[in-house]
Amino acid sequence: MIVAPLSAMAAPYAAMVMDARSGKVLHAENADTRLHPASLTKMMTLYIAFEAVQNGELSMDTVVSISRNATAEPPSKLGLRTGQKMKMRYLVRAAAVKSANDAATAIGEAISGSEAAFARRMTRTAKALGMTRTTFKNAHGLTESGHLSTARDMTILGRHMLYDYPQYYNLFSRRATDAGMKTVYSHNKLLVNYRGADGIKTGYTRAAGFNLVASAVRGRERVIATVFGGRSSSTRDKRVAELLDLGFKKAQTNVALNKPNRPAYMGNQGLGPVEVAKNADASPSGATGKSVRVVAAAVTRSLRPQLRPGAEPPAVPDTAPLVAEVADDITTALEEVQVAEAEVAPTPPAEDSEKAVAAAAIAEASGIAPGASVKPMRRPQGVLLASAGGTTADEATAEAAAQVAQKQEVVTRVSTSGGRHWGINVGRYPSRYAAEKVLLKTALMETSSLDGSLRKVVGRSNGFDANFMGLSREGADLACRRLQARQVTCFMIGPS
Image (cartoon, rainbow, N blue to C red; front, side, top):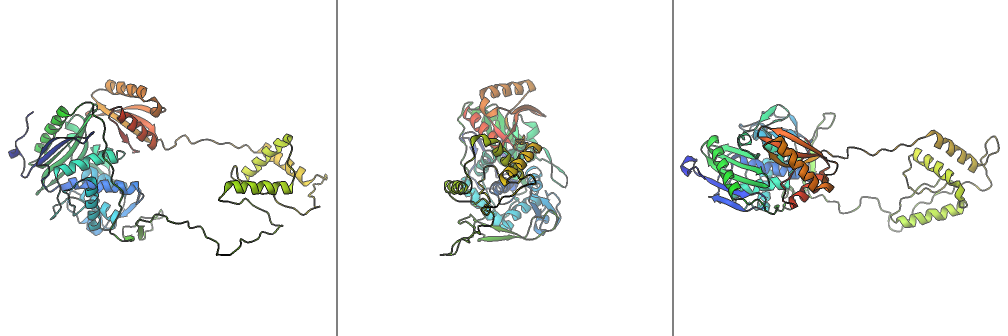
């Protein structure tokens, strides 16, 4: 293995190679030296964005109002304007693919209210991930005093990104994407020039040099390599390619998958019980206002009104219709209904089942939920409702029910979509035939969880992706976990 000498790199220099499946370090140079991470910082910005979406702080469709602070960030940038409204999904794409500084700042402000508060959350999250020598001061990675990390810590973060949020990992594989305002292009040339490379993040500042965290998969093996301090982008890419080659050479083929533990969700700790965010979401009509984000707002008690102590529930007049009551004890409620029915009318004979069907049709047409208990209406004793022909009220009700049942046809249909917009990837292969062969073999191996999925081969410039599509999110996660237990490399593909 020919390794570029340290003199070919911009000092200071650091590197690490890790087996992504087990977390085993395969190679390290100055891996614990604290250096400027540059735009590798945005991996943490995006990690927290995914965490915030996962825990309901916001969504990918949240509309963010861009601040003056965000628009003032130097390049690389998307070109956002102060006061502009932009969906979170486009900011995430711009930060992941183009490494846009203005988009990264806007993401941080949208989540924590200010970039300083977001940087504190970044540092807390880093410590929770085991990144013990990392401190963040901003969301974008531009040089700032105290904003430091290490090759080891950034490799750990890259591994967490891969396994904690696999549904978003495909963002780092994109060479181009729609960022709302325009199409943006990736700086990561390794995606094209290295077989099996599928992410994840580049970075550059004058103080940091050229940095890169890269991941590649070949068959069952996946390796992550990190370089700090490259002299140029081409020198850095060449060095990372050598490190990945070294990693694949040292990595064992059959290694038990040992995913890292996702840290406990902490949210925006330290911001007080209520954080008022100026970057409000826009309403469908276009109106905006301040958005209040309540932190640690878990429901601790029921909001249903309670009776005052000693108060009795209001009595219902005998002449008023009695409607279905909601009771906490379902069994008690059913018993009450049965007693009430026994008082009002005798039990119908078995041959009156047709009337029961007609009554069910009336109930469904009236909007009463199937299976709901409804107490019958009482009428004064001795009073009969009669039709022109002298028909009694019970007979009239049965006749009307039969007519409704004849005229109405209730059709139910189960949704065919079921949210089956997810998929899984089981590797990238040099030929379509090889990808199709792996898909068939995998489908036969894991028939239960992949039943009903669609085998799809997607051609790329550097190979053919073997995908199973048409799964629900839970189904894709289950299939991946079962395949990984069989030592099959797999990651989830989210809705595009």
